[in-house]
Amino acid sequence: GGIGKTSLAKEYLKRYNADYQYIAWLEQTSTLSNAFILDDLLHQNLGLKFSNEEESYKFKTILNSLKNLQGTNLLVIDNYAEKDEDTA
Image: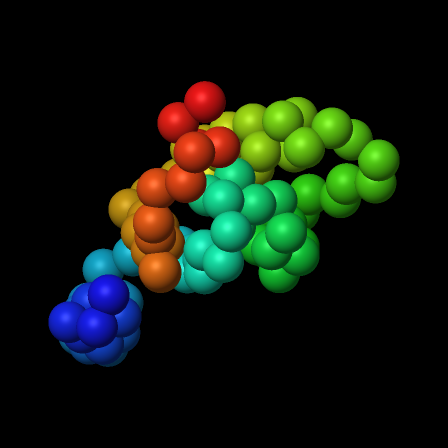
């Protein structure tokens, strides 16, 4: 942390956002999977609605939806830090 990676990513987006059909910016505050699972705006933008599904199902569904987006797309994961749960 502390070397300006977020600022660099923001500057990149200012310059090159027109090159992408879809851009998703996720903030990792706990595990990587939770960054996807807890982002309601991401779910809404992907047209996904979850209720009581298992977290693993939600995570796989979100990743599959992102994978199937057409065009050139960018996924930024801010504050990424590998956690034990991410490697399990």
